[in-house]
Image 1 (tube, one colour):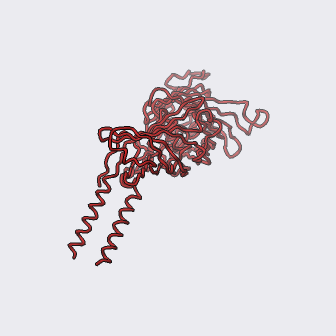
Image 2 (cartoon, chains in turn green, blue):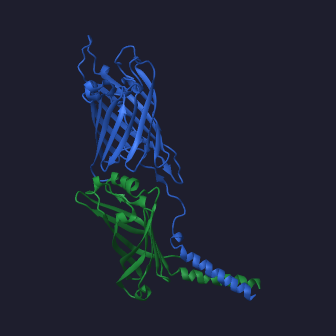
Image 3 (tube, chains in turn cyan, green):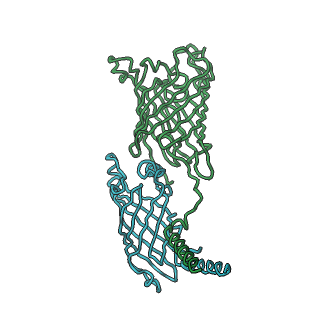
Length: 186
Length: 289
């Protein structure tokens, strides 16, 4: 009897492990954002974007530390964290969504596919529903992904004082690139 | 038996579902990263004194500091605005932890040079450093014409200072630093005064909004100074607008370098001998980060 129970657990965990194989992840995604304003253009990069993609359910999640964004000017970086994003209070930006299309059936041969990801973006403590266009590519069994979308600062309660309104755009363009998804082993 | 099996089945599904819920949790690092605490003060000066803040590498800070006359001079001097003392300076960040600067004040037509190094940087995380520790060393040279019977030599006109800043950003809003300083004047203004003066001081800031902060700094000098010389006390407001920081303040100090404000401040702050003043800081970014 006892042996049977142990066997069952082993079997169960084996199946669980099999399911986990269908998950992909990366810790080296790249997020870049751009602000184009009359006086200056601002650009910042973060190459420590985390992403997990559960292929069985189509769920994708992204998370990035605000303090990891690097700017050309140190003062911009300080203002970004201190005055705009309040990174001590809201350390992460998180996206949780689901891929609308049945991707699994595409990803059997090389190619690039356009998809839509619907979900919620949490930024500066504010969570909003977003629909984001993205592309997923497969080449030699390696899966990469990319997306470009924009956010309105006002939607996320990020206030730009009037005195710098010609320095910072109200709409920020965000580019996300996942160079390569790795299988998530358990 | 069947009961047990079904319970286990439900349990395993539950565990499975739970694992799916927390996708990100499966790859996030449980270890907290070390994070340097930034922005304890808005500027590299609290008001008169250096703050624990450093310039970032390749940043040039052009500062204009103004102190008007005593408000207690009354309407005849437009509450001090007719009289102005001025210091202009250029500070440059050689690295993130090493800054040098040069300044010139109208008060005694004095030049000053300084070097400032950060020894410890307040850090949160696995490596916890509770304070930032900064050391500043500088020298001053007054170039005003002397009418003394014996003309002072260049060395007579010089003074040196070394200051230690130990500060902490206690919260998002409140930062405080202690700033002991040693000033050595080769030839004090009055021969009865001590050549070497040790002073103990402190400075702080309290943020009232994202871009506005209230600041104060104070130093008490130990040693023999002329009776007319008093402890420099200042209170002010920092206003930050992008690349500029405006510091508006009330202070009893005329001079704005370390020698001048420690050893040559006159006026009783609490009897209305207060000067209105402002510091203007404009940051220029030279070279890449």
